[in-house]
Amino acid sequence: MPTLDLMLALGGAAALLAAILPDVLARRPVSLPLVYLVAGVLLFALPIGLPDPDPIVHRTALEHIAELCVVISLMGAGLAINRPVGARRWSTTWRLLGLAMPITVLMVAAAAVALPGWPFAAALLLGAVLAPTDPVLASDVQVGEPVDAENADDEVRFALTSEAGLNDGLAFPFVYAAIAVAVSTGAGRLGEWALTDVLHRTVAGLASGLLIGYLLGRLFFHGAAGGRPLSERRDGFVALAATFLAYGVTELIHGYGFIAVFVTACAIRNAERGHGYNNVLHGFVEQLERLFTAWLLLLLGGFVATGGLAALTWRGAAVGLLLVLVIRPLAGWLSQWRGRAGPRERLAVSFFGIRGIGSLFYLAYALGEADFGVPAEELWAVTGFTIVVSVVLHGVTATPVMRRVDAIRDRRAAASEG
Image 1 (cartoon, rainbow, N blue to C red):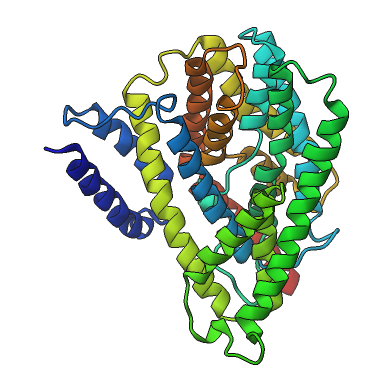
Image 2 (cartoon, rainbow, N blue to C red):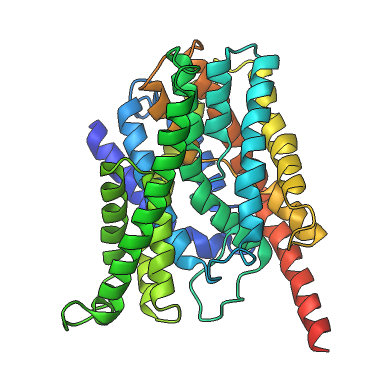
């Protein structure tokens, strides 16, 4: 059977299942990403002539596919958040971004130096790659569709969604720092890194996202020069246009496109919070996200099935397990001390630091920029193992844990009304 025909058939089947499985798996302790991961392992274990999904050989293709998947997911996350941006309303988010994320980067880097004995550049890269939570694979613990009520998002889903929407872009300064160390310019480039990679690129991403989101919001809901608003046409693919426009323009001015896409989505939503067109835009983006997620997770399963974890040592595996089981929960818990979330909500937010597609993008990007003194196979093995652990652990716990969180919230609401 020709390889292309086989890939098209499997891609079509995966896309069809992406439409069917959400209803089948609803309220079951199995997530859609977990099903695709297992399916990928089984498919690539069969002797049917599938190509080897080697991330080293296909690094450039993987980088761009993962990049596309992440930006689409960021648009969906921003459109779905119902809570307006504010210092107090988003206080849990700011804590997770400003405290939990840097702590996670440093603790993972320290573990990578202490256990596998990696050089600092590789250890810092691993911390930067694995620190951001994932907006792609965390759909089971994130907010749902846009609704008219501003207080519709519970603290757990809101915190995980908003954190994932912003920390993908905020991981880039740490990635650039690791690259600078790897090419032996880390010490001399500290000032340039702070001004360019941290300040300029972040501010450019925020400003570009706000401006583009504001202009697109006017165009969508009010029309241009007295013309007909795009919202009246109900075209969902306009969300894809907004995604590419925000990302492309921001990258051209050397800003962080990931930040710009999420901010653009929030600004569009803020233009007319209760308008039904937000649901049209979000629905289209969500469909694309599920499609790309299905394909990428099949390939991740194939990576596991074809020996991608062969370079994994017990020390490297220990770093991944420490991140998922200790580092992220501890950093997330401490960052929320005396915050808005209650004790059980804090525990849920801290636990569901899901790793995924964003990590694949960052590692593929960084390995194209420098040599980090550790074999690429080992870096991919540790990263892939950590993502697999996260998909499995969080995939089987998301439904029961979130059901428990919802029950607690309902009891509080009933008590308050009583």
